[in-house]
Image 1 (tube, one colour):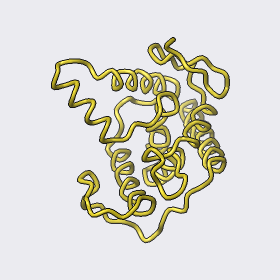
Image 2 (image 1 turned 90 degrees about the vertical axis):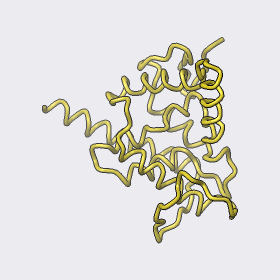
Image 3 (image 1 turned 60 degrees about the horizontal axis):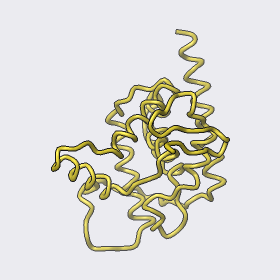
Image 4 (image 1 turned 135 degrees about the vertical axis):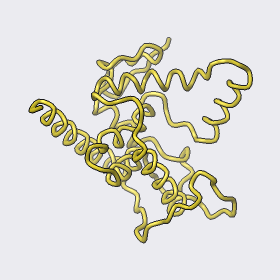
Length: 191
């Protein structure tokens, strides 16, 4: 069996994903229940909230892709960054494919097709993602002396994260996604 059943009852084939299998409700529902940092945060803090907060940091033309930048996790789960990097290094050192990365890429391409996105993330999206990672570490993770190299030098804001419930994250994420899709499709129709 290579498929999962989504919250909306859609059969999602992990090895052969298609745009037709992708649904905004499934993404919002799943990402709102999926915790960042494998749930090792001081309070429930969802991937949906992370994406929502990151999308507020970018220019309007990048907001949709930023909101969706972790949408693959609605279908394959969230893997902590150190494990993901270790798997890539392990596969590369043995001259084999990183199967997880291949599956994640196929799912991402289906999401891009569904929402008419370019597969390559703009630099602004990556910067917002790293910025939020730094804020999340400060606000949601236990104090620890070891530095995270990937977020060194990021200037932290005066504001602090007050995490939303899973239901609030789902609703905010879904409403914003639908609003962006409406605006994006309306703009494309007039071109």
